[in-house]
Length: 464
Ligand SMILES: Cc1cc2nc3c(=O)[nH]c(=O)nc-3n(C[C@H](O)[C@H](O)[C@H](O)COP(=O)(O)OP(=O)(O)OC[C@H]3O[C@@H](n4cnc5c(N)ncnc54)[C@H](O)[C@@H]3O)c2cc1C
Image (cartoon, rainbow, N blue to C red; front, side):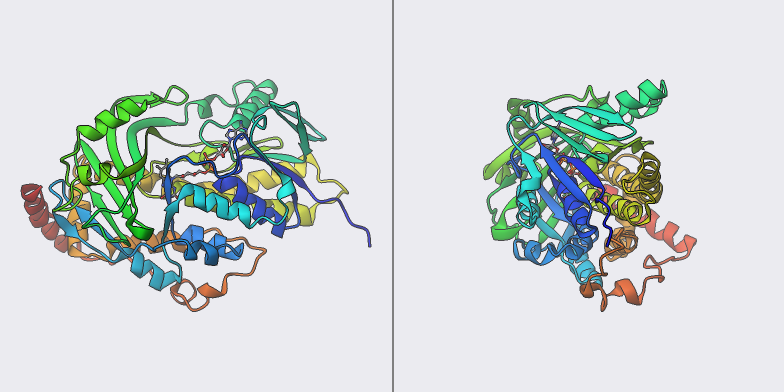
Protein backbone atom coordinates (compact mmCIF):
# COMPACT_ATOMS: atom_id res chain seq x y z
CA UNK A 1 0.00 0.00 0.00
CA UNK A 2 1.29 3.46 -0.90
CA UNK A 3 2.06 5.57 2.21
CA UNK A 4 2.50 9.32 2.14
CA UNK A 5 5.18 10.87 4.36
CA UNK A 6 3.54 12.41 7.43
CA UNK A 7 3.21 16.16 7.90
CA UNK A 8 6.09 17.37 10.06
CA UNK A 9 5.72 20.13 12.65
CA UNK A 10 8.62 21.92 14.30
CA UNK A 11 7.41 22.85 17.77
CA UNK A 12 9.40 25.63 19.42
CA UNK A 13 8.91 25.53 23.22
CA UNK A 14 8.77 22.38 25.31
CA UNK A 15 6.45 23.51 28.10
CA UNK A 16 2.68 23.13 28.54
CA UNK A 17 1.59 24.14 25.03
CA UNK A 18 4.50 22.49 23.21
CA UNK A 19 4.42 19.13 24.98
CA UNK A 20 0.60 18.87 24.85
CA UNK A 21 0.84 19.52 21.12
CA UNK A 22 3.58 16.89 20.73
CA UNK A 23 1.36 14.27 22.41
CA UNK A 24 -1.66 15.31 20.35
CA UNK A 25 0.25 15.14 17.04
CA UNK A 26 1.68 11.75 17.88
CA UNK A 27 -1.86 10.38 18.22
CA UNK A 28 -2.66 11.85 14.77
CA UNK A 29 0.43 10.20 13.21
CA UNK A 30 1.91 13.62 12.49
CA UNK A 31 5.67 13.89 12.87
CA UNK A 32 7.25 16.56 15.07
CA UNK A 33 10.42 17.82 16.74
CA UNK A 34 10.36 19.89 19.94
CA UNK A 35 13.05 22.52 20.56
CA UNK A 36 13.54 24.38 23.85
CA UNK A 37 16.19 26.85 24.91
CA UNK A 38 16.30 25.35 28.44
CA UNK A 39 16.33 21.82 29.84
CA UNK A 40 12.73 20.52 30.02
CA UNK A 41 10.92 21.35 33.28
CA UNK A 42 13.47 23.90 34.49
CA UNK A 43 12.44 25.19 37.90
CA UNK A 44 10.72 28.60 37.75
CA UNK A 45 9.02 28.46 41.15
CA UNK A 46 5.50 28.80 39.77
CA UNK A 47 2.47 26.66 40.47
CA UNK A 48 -0.47 25.80 38.26
CA UNK A 49 -4.10 24.75 38.68
CA UNK A 50 -5.31 22.44 35.94
CA UNK A 51 -9.06 22.81 35.74
CA UNK A 52 -11.62 20.49 34.17
CA UNK A 53 -10.98 21.74 30.62
CA UNK A 54 -7.26 20.97 30.80
CA UNK A 55 -7.93 17.66 32.58
CA UNK A 56 -10.26 16.42 29.81
CA UNK A 57 -7.63 16.84 27.08
CA UNK A 58 -4.90 15.37 29.27
CA UNK A 59 -7.20 12.41 29.94
CA UNK A 60 -7.58 11.83 26.20
CA UNK A 61 -3.79 11.76 26.04
CA UNK A 62 -3.59 9.19 28.86
CA UNK A 63 -1.95 11.60 31.32
CA UNK A 64 -4.74 12.64 33.71
CA UNK A 65 -4.60 9.58 35.97
CA UNK A 66 -0.93 10.20 36.78
CA UNK A 67 -1.55 13.91 37.17
CA UNK A 68 -4.32 13.22 39.69
CA UNK A 69 -2.00 10.98 41.71
CA UNK A 70 0.43 13.89 42.19
CA UNK A 71 -1.99 16.40 43.71
CA UNK A 72 -4.29 17.27 46.54
CA UNK A 73 -7.37 18.47 44.66
CA UNK A 74 -8.97 21.84 45.22
CA UNK A 75 -12.34 21.54 46.99
CA UNK A 76 -13.33 24.89 48.49
CA UNK A 77 -12.87 28.48 47.33
CA UNK A 78 -13.16 30.98 50.16
CA UNK A 79 -14.05 34.43 48.90
CA UNK A 80 -12.96 37.14 51.31
CA UNK A 81 -13.00 40.87 51.96
CA UNK A 82 -9.77 42.83 52.66
CA UNK A 83 -10.36 42.24 56.38
CA UNK A 84 -10.13 38.48 55.74
CA UNK A 85 -13.85 38.16 56.47
CA UNK A 86 -15.56 35.36 54.58
CA UNK A 87 -18.19 36.40 52.02
CA UNK A 88 -18.79 32.86 50.80
CA UNK A 89 -16.96 29.52 50.97
CA UNK A 90 -18.43 27.64 48.06
CA UNK A 91 -17.31 24.04 47.46
CA UNK A 92 -16.63 25.07 43.86
CA UNK A 93 -13.83 22.55 43.27
CA UNK A 94 -15.86 19.68 44.75
CA UNK A 95 -18.92 20.62 42.70
CA UNK A 96 -16.93 20.77 39.48
CA UNK A 97 -15.40 17.39 40.29
CA UNK A 98 -18.86 15.95 40.86
CA UNK A 99 -20.16 17.41 37.61
CA UNK A 100 -17.28 16.51 35.29
CA UNK A 101 -15.54 13.61 37.01
CA UNK A 102 -12.24 15.53 37.13
CA UNK A 103 -10.49 17.19 40.08
CA UNK A 104 -9.01 20.67 40.02
CA UNK A 105 -5.32 19.71 40.18
CA UNK A 106 -2.88 22.04 41.95
CA UNK A 107 0.84 21.42 41.55
CA UNK A 108 4.18 23.08 40.81
CA UNK A 109 4.30 23.94 37.08
CA UNK A 110 7.58 22.10 36.59
CA UNK A 111 6.01 18.83 37.85
CA UNK A 112 3.28 19.10 35.22
CA UNK A 113 5.85 19.70 32.49
CA UNK A 114 7.99 16.81 33.75
CA UNK A 115 4.90 14.58 33.65
CA UNK A 116 4.14 15.61 30.06
CA UNK A 117 7.74 14.88 29.13
CA UNK A 118 7.89 11.53 30.96
CA UNK A 119 4.83 10.37 29.02
CA UNK A 120 6.42 11.10 25.63
CA UNK A 121 7.44 7.80 24.07
CA UNK A 122 10.16 9.07 21.74
CA UNK A 123 12.39 11.47 23.63
CA UNK A 124 14.86 11.67 20.75
CA UNK A 125 12.42 14.14 19.18
CA UNK A 126 13.05 16.65 21.98
CA UNK A 127 16.08 18.94 21.64
CA UNK A 128 16.38 21.05 24.78
CA UNK A 129 19.02 22.91 26.72
CA UNK A 130 22.22 24.80 25.97
CA UNK A 131 22.42 26.07 22.39
CA UNK A 132 18.84 25.21 21.50
CA UNK A 133 17.46 28.76 21.54
CA UNK A 134 15.70 29.38 18.23
CA UNK A 135 17.18 32.42 16.55
CA UNK A 136 15.82 32.36 12.99
CA UNK A 137 13.21 30.70 10.82
CA UNK A 138 13.46 30.49 7.03
CA UNK A 139 10.20 30.10 5.13
CA UNK A 140 9.49 29.02 1.56
CA UNK A 141 6.75 27.33 -0.46
CA UNK A 142 8.55 24.04 0.20
CA UNK A 143 8.68 24.29 3.98
CA UNK A 144 10.31 25.90 7.00
CA UNK A 145 13.82 25.64 8.40
CA UNK A 146 14.31 26.52 12.06
CA UNK A 147 17.80 27.52 13.24
CA UNK A 148 19.14 27.32 16.80
CA UNK A 149 22.08 29.09 18.46
CA UNK A 150 24.33 26.02 18.26
CA UNK A 151 24.14 26.04 14.45
CA UNK A 152 21.65 23.15 14.13
CA UNK A 153 18.62 23.43 11.89
CA UNK A 154 15.31 21.56 11.78
CA UNK A 155 13.10 21.30 8.67
CA UNK A 156 9.37 20.78 8.54
CA UNK A 157 6.06 21.63 6.89
CA UNK A 158 4.91 23.99 9.65
CA UNK A 159 6.57 25.80 12.57
CA UNK A 160 4.57 26.22 15.78
CA UNK A 161 5.59 28.88 18.29
CA UNK A 162 4.83 27.47 21.76
CA UNK A 163 7.58 29.71 23.09
CA UNK A 164 5.68 31.95 25.46
CA UNK A 165 5.00 35.66 25.74
CA UNK A 166 8.42 36.66 24.36
CA UNK A 167 8.04 34.25 21.41
CA UNK A 168 10.84 34.23 18.83
CA UNK A 169 8.66 32.33 16.38
CA UNK A 170 6.05 35.09 16.58
CA UNK A 171 8.79 37.68 15.82
CA UNK A 172 9.94 35.61 12.85
CA UNK A 173 6.33 35.21 11.68
CA UNK A 174 5.88 38.99 11.79
CA UNK A 175 9.19 39.54 9.97
CA UNK A 176 8.18 37.25 7.10
CA UNK A 177 4.60 38.54 7.01
CA UNK A 178 5.78 42.16 6.79
CA UNK A 179 8.27 41.33 4.02
CA UNK A 180 5.41 39.90 1.95
CA UNK A 181 2.61 42.21 3.05
CA UNK A 182 4.09 45.43 4.52
CA UNK A 183 2.33 46.45 7.74
CA UNK A 184 0.67 43.06 8.20
CA UNK A 185 1.89 42.64 11.81
CA UNK A 186 1.37 46.24 12.90
CA UNK A 187 -1.80 45.80 14.99
CA UNK A 188 -0.52 42.65 16.69
CA UNK A 189 2.75 44.26 17.74
CA UNK A 190 0.81 46.26 20.33
CA UNK A 191 -1.53 43.42 21.35
CA UNK A 192 -0.04 42.75 24.80
CA UNK A 193 -0.24 45.23 27.66
CA UNK A 194 0.32 44.90 31.38
CA UNK A 195 -1.49 46.86 34.08
CA UNK A 196 -1.08 44.49 37.04
CA UNK A 197 1.92 42.76 38.58
CA UNK A 198 1.95 39.49 40.46
CA UNK A 199 4.25 38.40 43.28
CA UNK A 200 4.00 34.62 43.38
CA UNK A 201 5.74 31.76 45.05
CA UNK A 202 5.54 28.54 46.98
CA UNK A 203 5.69 28.31 50.79
CA UNK A 204 5.64 25.50 53.33
CA UNK A 205 2.51 24.59 55.32
CA UNK A 206 0.91 27.32 57.44
CA UNK A 207 -1.40 26.50 60.39
CA UNK A 208 -4.96 27.55 59.51
CA UNK A 209 -4.57 26.89 55.78
CA UNK A 210 -5.75 23.31 55.13
CA UNK A 211 -4.98 21.43 51.89
CA UNK A 212 -7.75 21.61 49.26
CA UNK A 213 -8.76 25.18 50.10
CA UNK A 214 -8.21 28.40 48.18
CA UNK A 215 -8.58 31.89 49.59
CA UNK A 216 -9.31 34.82 47.32
CA UNK A 217 -8.93 38.08 49.18
CA UNK A 218 -10.31 41.10 47.35
CA UNK A 219 -8.60 44.41 47.96
CA UNK A 220 -8.07 47.87 46.51
CA UNK A 221 -4.28 48.23 46.77
CA UNK A 222 -3.39 44.55 46.77
CA UNK A 223 -5.42 41.38 46.40
CA UNK A 224 -4.41 37.79 47.13
CA UNK A 225 -4.92 34.24 46.04
CA UNK A 226 -3.66 31.27 48.01
CA UNK A 227 -4.10 27.64 46.94
CA UNK A 228 -3.23 24.97 49.47
CA UNK A 229 -1.87 21.84 47.82
CA UNK A 230 -0.24 18.55 48.72
CA UNK A 231 1.41 18.45 52.20
CA UNK A 232 -0.10 21.85 52.94
CA UNK A 233 2.23 23.66 50.51
CA UNK A 234 0.93 27.18 49.95
CA UNK A 235 0.93 28.53 46.39
CA UNK A 236 0.61 32.26 46.96
CA UNK A 237 -0.15 35.23 44.68
CA UNK A 238 -0.17 38.92 45.53
CA UNK A 239 -1.68 41.09 42.79
CA UNK A 240 -1.15 44.84 42.49
CA UNK A 241 -2.09 47.46 39.90
CA UNK A 242 1.12 49.06 38.59
CA UNK A 243 1.53 52.82 38.49
CA UNK A 244 1.68 52.74 34.67
CA UNK A 245 0.23 50.74 31.80
CA UNK A 246 3.06 49.07 29.85
CA UNK A 247 3.01 47.83 26.29
CA UNK A 248 4.94 44.65 25.48
CA UNK A 249 7.94 44.42 24.85
CA UNK A 250 8.52 47.33 27.24
CA UNK A 251 7.06 45.46 30.24
CA UNK A 252 9.04 46.17 33.43
CA UNK A 253 11.44 43.63 34.95
CA UNK A 254 11.56 43.40 38.74
CA UNK A 255 14.48 42.43 40.97
CA UNK A 256 14.22 40.06 43.94
CA UNK A 257 14.80 43.11 46.18
CA UNK A 258 11.71 44.80 44.71
CA UNK A 259 9.74 41.60 45.28
CA UNK A 260 10.88 41.46 48.90
CA UNK A 261 10.05 45.06 49.57
CA UNK A 262 6.54 44.61 48.11
CA UNK A 263 6.05 41.56 50.34
CA UNK A 264 7.40 43.32 53.42
CA UNK A 265 5.01 46.24 52.84
CA UNK A 266 2.10 43.78 52.99
CA UNK A 267 3.16 41.50 55.84
CA UNK A 268 0.11 42.42 57.92
CA UNK A 269 -2.44 41.91 55.11
CA UNK A 270 -5.13 39.36 55.90
CA UNK A 271 -5.40 36.05 54.03
CA UNK A 272 -8.08 34.72 56.37
CA UNK A 273 -9.45 36.22 59.59
CA UNK A 274 -6.56 34.51 61.47
CA UNK A 275 -3.73 34.19 58.93
CA UNK A 276 -1.69 37.10 57.57
CA UNK A 277 0.44 37.28 54.43
CA UNK A 278 3.44 37.47 56.79
CA UNK A 279 2.62 33.96 58.12
CA UNK A 280 3.02 32.66 54.56
CA UNK A 281 5.96 34.84 53.53
CA UNK A 282 8.07 33.61 56.43
CA UNK A 283 7.67 30.04 55.06
CA UNK A 284 8.50 30.97 51.44
CA UNK A 285 10.67 28.64 49.39
CA UNK A 286 10.50 30.50 46.08
CA UNK A 287 9.22 33.90 44.98
CA UNK A 288 9.15 36.01 41.81
CA UNK A 289 7.59 39.35 40.87
CA UNK A 290 6.37 39.71 37.26
CA UNK A 291 4.15 42.00 35.22
CA UNK A 292 1.03 40.19 33.97
CA UNK A 293 0.60 40.79 30.24
CA UNK A 294 -2.89 40.60 28.78
CA UNK A 295 -3.87 40.35 25.12
CA UNK A 296 -5.01 38.11 22.29
CA UNK A 297 -3.38 38.32 18.84
CA UNK A 298 -5.60 39.12 15.84
CA UNK A 299 -3.55 36.87 13.57
CA UNK A 300 -2.42 33.54 14.98
CA UNK A 301 -0.82 32.37 11.74
CA UNK A 302 0.89 33.45 8.56
CA UNK A 303 2.16 31.15 5.79
CA UNK A 304 3.56 28.05 7.49
CA UNK A 305 3.88 29.81 10.88
CA UNK A 306 1.47 29.59 13.78
CA UNK A 307 1.47 30.25 17.53
CA UNK A 308 -0.13 28.45 20.48
CA UNK A 309 -0.44 29.25 24.21
CA UNK A 310 1.06 32.40 25.74
CA UNK A 311 2.67 33.24 22.40
CA UNK A 312 -0.83 33.80 20.98
CA UNK A 313 -2.98 34.66 23.99
CA UNK A 314 -1.87 35.91 27.37
CA UNK A 315 -4.06 36.36 30.43
CA UNK A 316 -3.60 37.46 34.00
CA UNK A 317 -3.10 34.67 36.51
CA UNK A 318 -6.34 35.41 38.43
CA UNK A 319 -8.65 33.05 36.52
CA UNK A 320 -6.07 30.24 36.23
CA UNK A 321 -6.78 29.73 32.55
CA UNK A 322 -3.51 30.60 30.74
CA UNK A 323 -2.13 27.07 30.88
CA UNK A 324 -5.52 25.41 30.51
CA UNK A 325 -6.13 27.64 27.48
CA UNK A 326 -2.75 26.58 26.07
CA UNK A 327 -3.80 22.92 26.37
CA UNK A 328 -7.07 23.61 24.55
CA UNK A 329 -5.31 25.61 21.83
CA UNK A 330 -2.85 22.77 21.30
CA UNK A 331 -5.81 20.39 20.90
CA UNK A 332 -7.50 22.74 18.43
CA UNK A 333 -4.36 23.04 16.30
CA UNK A 334 -3.85 19.26 16.37
CA UNK A 335 -7.46 18.78 15.17
CA UNK A 336 -6.86 21.15 12.25
CA UNK A 337 -3.54 19.55 11.27
CA UNK A 338 -5.07 16.08 11.53
CA UNK A 339 -7.79 17.18 9.12
CA UNK A 340 -5.16 18.50 6.70
CA UNK A 341 -3.13 15.30 7.00
CA UNK A 342 -6.13 13.13 6.15
CA UNK A 343 -7.51 15.27 3.33
CA UNK A 344 -4.32 16.39 1.52
CA UNK A 345 -4.23 15.70 -2.18
CA UNK A 346 -0.53 15.33 -2.94
CA UNK A 347 2.30 13.29 -1.57
CA UNK A 348 3.49 16.22 0.52
CA UNK A 349 1.11 18.68 2.11
CA UNK A 350 1.07 21.96 0.16
CA UNK A 351 1.50 25.44 1.63
CA UNK A 352 -2.11 26.15 0.69
CA UNK A 353 -3.32 23.13 2.65
CA UNK A 354 -1.23 24.15 5.66
CA UNK A 355 -2.59 27.70 5.45
CA UNK A 356 -6.16 26.41 5.35
CA UNK A 357 -5.52 24.24 8.41
CA UNK A 358 -3.99 27.14 10.35
CA UNK A 359 -6.86 29.42 9.38
CA UNK A 360 -9.36 26.78 10.56
CA UNK A 361 -7.46 26.51 13.85
CA UNK A 362 -7.70 30.24 14.47
CA UNK A 363 -11.32 30.57 13.40
CA UNK A 364 -12.41 27.71 15.59
CA UNK A 365 -10.36 28.56 18.66
CA UNK A 366 -10.16 32.34 18.85
CA UNK A 367 -13.78 33.19 19.80
CA UNK A 368 -13.91 30.81 22.80
CA UNK A 369 -10.43 31.85 23.92
CA UNK A 370 -11.34 35.55 23.66
CA UNK A 371 -14.35 35.04 25.94
CA UNK A 372 -12.21 33.36 28.56
CA UNK A 373 -9.51 36.03 28.27
CA UNK A 374 -12.22 38.64 28.80
CA UNK A 375 -13.42 36.79 31.92
CA UNK A 376 -9.82 36.80 33.23
CA UNK A 377 -9.64 40.57 32.54
CA UNK A 378 -12.88 41.17 34.46
CA UNK A 379 -12.06 38.94 37.43
CA UNK A 380 -8.70 40.70 37.85
CA UNK A 381 -10.44 44.07 38.20
CA UNK A 382 -13.14 42.57 40.41
CA UNK A 383 -10.52 41.20 42.79
CA UNK A 384 -8.93 44.66 42.84
CA UNK A 385 -12.32 46.13 43.87
CA UNK A 386 -12.38 48.52 40.90
CA UNK A 387 -15.77 50.09 40.17
CA UNK A 388 -19.20 48.72 41.04
CA UNK A 389 -18.87 45.24 39.46
CA UNK A 390 -17.01 43.71 42.43
CA UNK A 391 -19.81 44.59 44.77
CA UNK A 392 -22.43 43.13 42.45
CA UNK A 393 -20.26 40.01 42.09
CA UNK A 394 -19.67 39.60 45.83
CA UNK A 395 -23.31 40.26 46.66
CA UNK A 396 -24.51 37.72 44.11
CA UNK A 397 -22.02 35.17 45.42
CA UNK A 398 -23.21 35.78 48.96
CA UNK A 399 -26.74 35.09 47.76
CA UNK A 400 -25.86 32.07 45.57
CA UNK A 401 -22.68 30.25 46.61
CA UNK A 402 -22.89 27.88 43.61
CA UNK A 403 -22.40 30.80 41.21
CA UNK A 404 -18.64 30.25 40.77
CA UNK A 405 -19.04 26.56 39.98
CA UNK A 406 -21.96 27.33 37.65
CA UNK A 407 -20.02 29.92 35.67
CA UNK A 408 -17.06 27.55 35.40
CA UNK A 409 -19.34 24.69 34.38
CA UNK A 410 -20.69 26.74 31.49
CA UNK A 411 -17.16 27.61 30.49
CA UNK A 412 -15.91 24.02 30.63
CA UNK A 413 -18.86 22.61 28.69
CA UNK A 414 -17.34 24.23 25.59
CA UNK A 415 -13.89 22.63 26.04
CA UNK A 416 -12.05 21.81 22.82
CA UNK A 417 -11.40 18.07 22.84
CA UNK A 418 -9.23 16.12 20.40
CA UNK A 419 -11.81 15.02 17.89
CA UNK A 420 -9.82 12.01 16.64
CA UNK A 421 -9.40 10.40 20.07
CA UNK A 422 -12.32 8.79 21.86
CA UNK A 423 -14.10 11.02 24.37
CA UNK A 424 -12.77 9.97 27.80
CA UNK A 425 -14.93 7.28 29.47
CA UNK A 426 -14.87 9.34 32.67
CA UNK A 427 -17.15 11.86 30.95
CA UNK A 428 -19.77 9.28 29.98
CA UNK A 429 -21.49 9.28 33.37
CA UNK A 430 -20.91 12.94 33.99
CA UNK A 431 -23.07 15.93 33.59
CA UNK A 432 -21.10 16.69 30.39
CA UNK A 433 -23.26 14.27 28.46
CA UNK A 434 -26.39 14.31 30.57
CA UNK A 435 -27.08 18.02 30.81
CA UNK A 436 -25.04 19.58 28.07
CA UNK A 437 -27.77 21.96 26.95
CA UNK A 438 -29.10 22.90 30.35
CA UNK A 439 -28.10 26.37 31.55
CA UNK A 440 -26.53 26.35 35.00
CA UNK A 441 -26.84 29.97 35.96
CA UNK A 442 -30.16 30.79 37.48
CA UNK A 443 -32.06 33.81 36.19
CA UNK A 444 -33.78 35.42 39.16
CA UNK A 445 -36.06 38.38 38.51
CA UNK A 446 -34.41 41.74 37.96
CA UNK A 447 -36.20 43.36 40.88
CA UNK A 448 -35.06 40.64 43.23
CA UNK A 449 -31.46 40.93 42.05
CA UNK A 450 -31.53 44.72 42.36
CA UNK A 451 -32.95 44.53 45.86
CA UNK A 452 -30.50 41.90 47.11
CA UNK A 453 -27.55 43.60 45.48
CA UNK A 454 -28.39 46.93 47.07
CA UNK A 455 -28.78 45.57 50.58
CA UNK A 456 -25.72 43.35 50.41
CA UNK A 457 -23.53 45.94 48.74
CA UNK A 458 -24.17 48.33 51.60
CA UNK A 459 -23.44 45.67 54.21
CA UNK A 460 -20.30 44.44 52.41
CA UNK A 461 -18.91 47.96 51.98
CA UNK A 462 -19.45 48.54 55.68
CA UNK A 463 -17.71 45.25 56.60
CA UNK A 464 -14.74 45.78 54.25
C1 LIG B 1 2.57 32.68 38.70
C2 LIG B 1 1.73 32.09 37.62
C3 LIG B 1 0.69 31.26 37.96
C4 LIG B 1 -0.11 30.70 36.96
N1 LIG B 1 -1.15 29.90 37.31
C5 LIG B 1 -1.89 29.32 36.35
C6 LIG B 1 -2.95 28.41 36.69
O1 LIG B 1 -3.23 28.16 37.85
N2 LIG B 1 -3.64 27.84 35.67
C7 LIG B 1 -3.36 28.11 34.36
O2 LIG B 1 -4.02 27.56 33.49
N3 LIG B 1 -2.39 28.97 34.03
C8 LIG B 1 -1.65 29.58 34.97
N4 LIG B 1 -0.63 30.43 34.63
C9 LIG B 1 -0.36 30.68 33.22
C10 LIG B 1 0.46 29.55 32.63
O3 LIG B 1 1.57 29.26 33.42
C11 LIG B 1 0.87 29.91 31.22
O4 LIG B 1 -0.25 30.33 30.50
C12 LIG B 1 1.49 28.69 30.55
O5 LIG B 1 2.63 28.29 31.24
C13 LIG B 1 1.80 29.00 29.10
O6 LIG B 1 2.43 27.89 28.56
P1 LIG B 1 3.21 27.97 27.18
O7 LIG B 1 3.71 26.58 26.94
O8 LIG B 1 2.37 28.63 26.17
O9 LIG B 1 4.43 28.98 27.42
P2 LIG B 1 5.62 28.99 28.47
O10 LIG B 1 5.26 28.33 29.72
O11 LIG B 1 6.07 30.40 28.57
O12 LIG B 1 6.76 28.11 27.80
C14 LIG B 1 7.51 28.58 26.71
C15 LIG B 1 8.67 27.64 26.47
O13 LIG B 1 9.36 28.09 25.31
C16 LIG B 1 10.75 28.10 25.56
N5 LIG B 1 11.33 29.14 24.71
C17 LIG B 1 11.11 30.48 24.76
N6 LIG B 1 11.79 31.10 23.78
C18 LIG B 1 12.45 30.13 23.09
C19 LIG B 1 13.32 30.15 21.97
N7 LIG B 1 13.66 31.28 21.33
N8 LIG B 1 13.85 28.99 21.53
C20 LIG B 1 13.52 27.81 22.14
N9 LIG B 1 12.69 27.74 23.20
C21 LIG B 1 12.16 28.89 23.67
C22 LIG B 1 10.87 28.38 27.04
O14 LIG B 1 12.09 27.91 27.56
C23 LIG B 1 9.67 27.64 27.61
O15 LIG B 1 9.99 26.31 27.95
C24 LIG B 1 0.17 31.00 35.61
C25 LIG B 1 1.22 31.85 35.27
C26 LIG B 1 2.00 32.38 36.27
C27 LIG B 1 3.14 33.32 35.91
